Image (cartoon, rainbow, N blue to C red; front, side):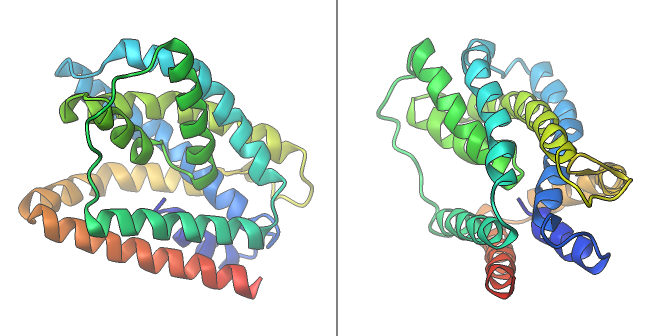
Length: 240
């Protein structure tokens, strides 16, 4: 979610079609998750923390929702999509700021329930360019799943969400006119390659900073960043 507003700003300055610029930003941000989640899944699997039965139970719903999300935002105007994104990110920032913790009062649902949950998570995640951990972790924590397994399993869920949503954004974008030659559907290929390369270089610096900072301060700083990004997208919605 943090990549979408900066990409929107850059793509606007580069003269990409204004009616597609937010769609391209969300699609490109989603595609980057394919690369970052692969490394994350490998590391979590090394510690045997991923609950694969939960992943497989969610996958059918994840696939359906991840294909549906790109179709939904493809039918939304830039102003409406910007407003939706801004409100959603502001709500996420508020949850982080107040440090809302889910109460572990439930159990994981059966197969049908997991499919439904997966569909809801992936629709929302694909509409905001995220892997879904911001919804999956609280859901599993509320179902009495240990936090270590929540985080690891959410990382594994991000891979099918990103893969299917990326395919959905390519298909949805191929139907649009006026997109530049270096886009694949809604995916901006040069931006994708630059982000992936930069993340490999700079992610360790962020990880070290995260371990040095107190958790409360880290959450507050991240919440402030999200509020600023949400404000930009809401401003853009009004100006569009």
